[in-house]
Length: 271
Image (cartoon, rainbow, N blue to C red; front, side, top):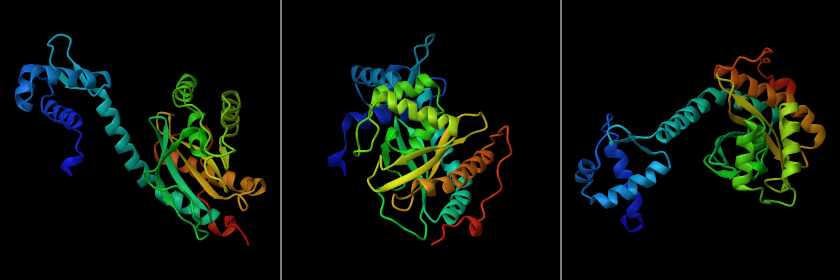
């Protein structure tokens, strides 16, 4: 509805759209004429967009062009779409083998974004849904990604977004949290015992691309009464195999061979 339109945001979006038609750049006078705005308004908007990397100015011509932030966002979108397609069959196998809920997520702006959720026969009520964002520090998925980012990038995320408590079990002490990331790096998986949602525990593992960069994570989640520490020992190899297989589909070549696809008959939880 027009009543809810933020005019300054709408104007900024219009500038981006017009600039996109000029790969060699466009001057501010011509741009102002195209969007029917005064140059002072256009200049303020461009300055803000440049600060965020959405627009850049050619130092030699003074003309404005699209910035690399837009390319980065576009690549993230494409990557998430490709990732979902490549991962879905493996996620379904994991859900069938574990008989628990399976998630696929990536990191965006210091938060975990769920991009896929596969239900199991043991459907449970969880807060997660595709598109939902949660703080990165309180999920196994987030820890599985943070642990394998460059150390300074991890510290920057922690310092910027903090470690707020979502439940009484959320790790809020920085030193303790960093130690948990060390454990994740050493073990190749992360766990979350009611840190994001009371009554829910999970096991997660990172997913790698062909450039050996961590790009996402997958997990198995279930009620803590069912996903006990003993049960986690059964789930860990299943989750890690799934992460390895998805990574291989994305072009990642590990030093060790990827495990065979899961056998639902031998891995399904009994009882």
